[in-house]
Image (cartoon, rainbow, N blue to C red; front, side, top):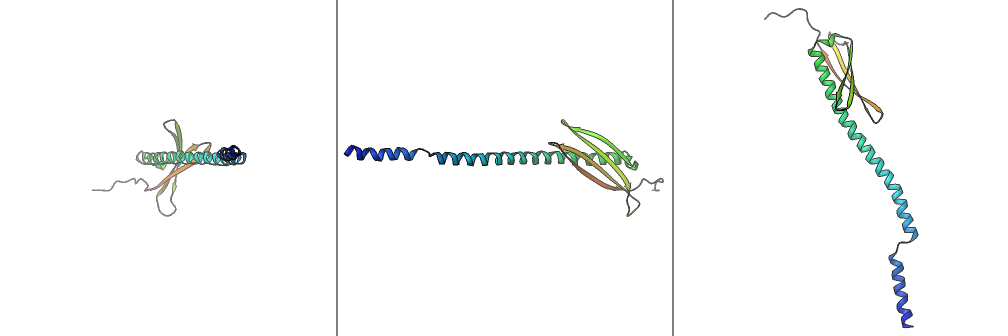
Length: 139
């Protein structure tokens, strides 16, 4: 009888150390919910990072093209377009100039387009330009 009494607590403690089927299934269910959510979160964060980086590059290109067109005197054209390559990424740009409604100036806008994971984005840089005068002031 003494042995039977001693065997019983050992058997119970051995059973208490193992996971039950319900605990294993609950853990698997939790993992099935958490892993896809975490993966989607990482994809969204990655896309946001790439979009921010390309948007910054596109804005730098827009400002550069805007300045180059002004210096070269091509702001008088109605429209122009081109393409810049940064790394392996193409950044097509378009320029549009029109008379400003408030004053005798030109409103010039350069728009640069880029793609991130199949979605198109664009950024624009604008400025006002005084029309080129035909006479030079006397000094």
